[in-house]
Length: 483
Image 1 (spheres, rainbow, N blue to C red):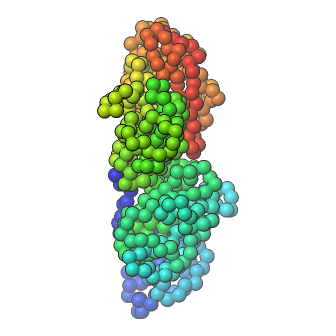
Image 2: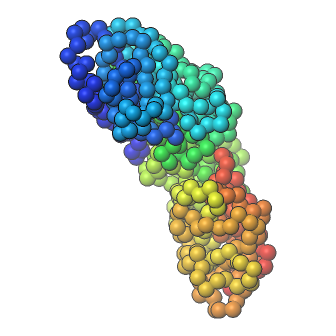
Image 3: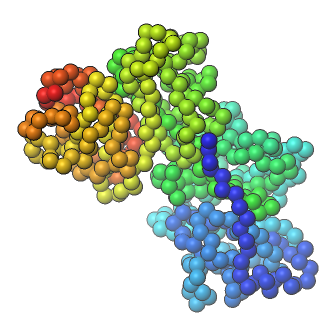
């Protein structure tokens, strides 16, 4: 269901390691490894002290190296662009770090090279791993906060509304001994803060063997889509060299685009996630953790207890991917029979807008059960749709290209009409104001009732993904066109 784990061994590279392997007393020498957690730093080669050959090579963002023993202390790391050689000046160097014999030190590259503030600038954090021994049946984890644009974090380690890690500031960690957690079971981490971007931010780690000691580095940018390379994520590395990049659990928003259904309640198992969503209303972000198989929609009830009757629709979460956000659109008319819900449906649309800082992007979704196949296009100062329309032949429950169509960051008019409409007929118009923001991704969901010759009962539900949580605006037609 959640194919998020890419476990693997990363080999220690470089002629320097070969030279070190011949030194006496290797077992007492400190062990070091490198974790690349700086989202805008290029791939690097890692040099230690005055070595002329890199100890590790071509380490890119999100990677954890293997371990290497080094005979001297203090240790100073110099990071150079991968393949550039010793003649290239370091792009970043650590402070000298005094270490003891036979200990492991993880050097974590954190922060942003391009940061305009010293509070978020790039740095190397030395983490000497002094885990307390885990009890039988347990593991220990130590969390390092390197999220460059993330605030102080609270971590709920079991998603049980108790905070095990409190007030974790940027570039600090949760403590050398590590937090004790059960082995051999999935671990659910819920991130909480005053920043609304963490309202539905959680992670699931696959079961870890008894006795594991694990370093977890929270990295990436909250301002970037979680599905992207630099989105907020976890780097997980145990003391044996096993490593993974863990993306956030998927998040869904439910939009009620069915006038016939009336207000809706949304449940995950027995927990109500949204209450009495009326037509055109959008749910809060809903975090989907592994093990939850369906999201269930019911007609609104006066209590928050899950109804005993069958759901209007149960949407499988099996295909939801980690790191992804989804819009689930409720459409159609519920049947009066509890055994026949075939006219009511919940369709999912992934947020896959191209990251475009210069212009907004729009994806058009057809959610009006009574409307035929539709065309839509921005109107460029003319009353008619252009000959070539960007949203062409969109059928019920279908959507235009998921990456979105570029639209101007200006007040604009979206024209909509049946694809079979005769040339010269004026479309129904929806005024999109204020202007979309550059970089904003918008779902334009056509909903409401269509009758031949009358489109006055249609609406455009405009869902903005620019901020967390997402928002919706219900736009009525400004010119009821023919049908």
